[in-house]
Length: 113
Image 1 (cartoon, rainbow, N blue to C red):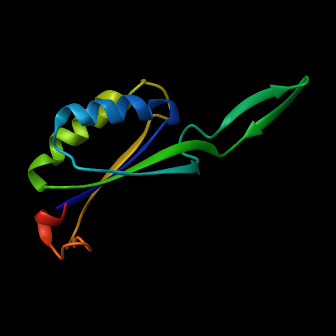
Image 2 (tube, helix red, strand yellow):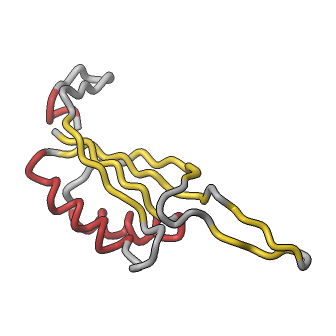
Image 3 (cartoon, one colour):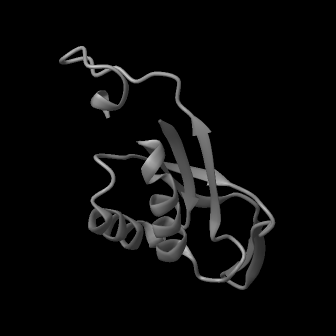
């Protein structure tokens, strides 16, 4: 099992969720609002004639625990749905999950996801 952690632009969340639904390879996701900074280094905005720099930008984190066989398809789906070609598109991290346990039934391993 693998944990896929995708950090994307907030405006791309609907596109990514719709694309993931179509794959049929995932059974659920954990979605969180975060603030972050990467190569984009923030943005400059103007308000009432004054310019100000915003260093931390809003992002969305999508966490998915998936079967090993589904990782490549899900990563490709997220990249295709979230990509704009501009700085700030985000990142995807894939790590190994040692164990999963469904609390309600006690199922373990891939049966729990």
